[in-house]
Length: 401
Image (cartoon, one colour):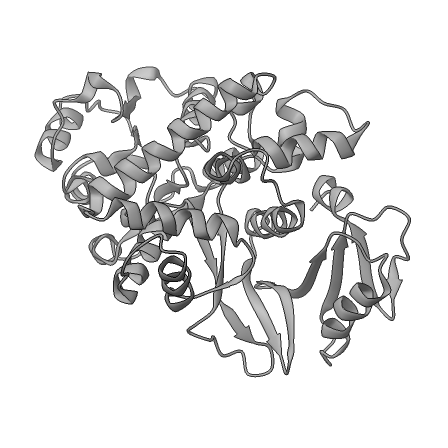
């Protein structure tokens, strides 16, 4: 196992606190492996294996645990005198599991870690029941920097390695099979189908699966473009893909896609007033390999994928990310954390004067003192335009944060 140090450190830092540690992320992003890494860490630091309960609910070994009562009974039967560490993988498969978790905290000396592949794990019901006593650790597919580590790549010929990353995406298992396109496509299709079936269709009892599939294809084709239910409906109807589509149904499906972690929505915000606009947000996919499997490996639009890669990287680095609007100009990303705000524009190249003028104009119009950055694939570039930094995207991705 290649250790994903950033995520492991977050868990270790939260160890033995009263909080329940909740690890979320799209399927096969590495949550189960992270729990195994943490279990290994515990054993290496003197915790006896008898004091660690590790349950993966996707294994048939635990098919008998159907609801919270079964879960409580199973864990109670393994309680030892010393402190217990409870690691529950894909716990959303257990009905009303949160009732057992709440009871464990009351009844035993126990440190709890759970993973799940959809946002229903942190529904308002759970938040209310646990009264804010949990820490969410958001896990994403491999960054480009991690992709290099997993493949044991050095920093030579990064352009071709980045093209490979843009093609295959960052699901960790891809690094084992990436030399075989047929295997990669089969694997990505399996993951996609699993997400759609288990986390969306089955969970929400969806009847109109054709509409759902076409919404996913639309979003995958329009990464980084403003999206609304009206736009989607008009497209599907005008192209005779769907005879009639209901706006409310489309909105519901968009919400379900977010909750399955296959899609992320970035809202538009007014940079002056800080107000959020309710419409025309942008959607980004959790893994560009999945996106390419949906549309086909031949349909790789590098320009849109660059924006997707930057968006996910900003999330990994702990920023809240919105789309910025300032007067008539739009800024690709407003990245904000408790200590800073940074404005980002993403473009394939600034070589064209018209493109350069357009990309600079939006940032130049913002009259505050926050950092402004343009990320581009250009190599020989002027790295400063009137205080606006210009950075090569690959250099930015492999840099220390």
